[in-house]
Image (cartoon, one colour):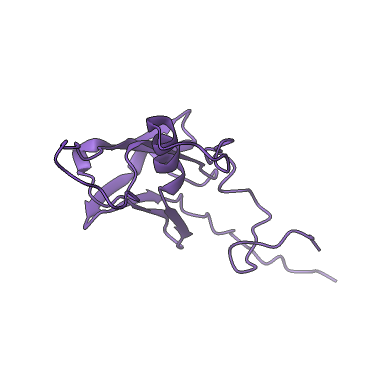
Length: 154
């Protein structure tokens, strides 16, 4: 048994690691000033994506509040990697404004996921509603084994 706890409530898949291509931010824990590069890194890290598998498809849901569908790209690389990217625009500052707190980050974001072999990348559909991007990747139908009985002669 692994000594590393799962962050997904103990559920583990030993088939493949679905988050193996997540973009890793090596500067995540460094104390940056409020520069634009740290905001961009924050936007990159803070894009949350859920991935569930149903009997018919792989379904990805990404929280993208305040982003228009025209500002988001959904792409397939090398026929196996799903890439969700875009840019969250930062509110323009007015010299007369006095900010008390800035927690919403702006900048570019990108998340990548290696799709399993049963993904039908030619039939992907994406929709966006209420700030949630839903990407549905249909699965290939599993061929049922054709079993024939053989009579045993004796």
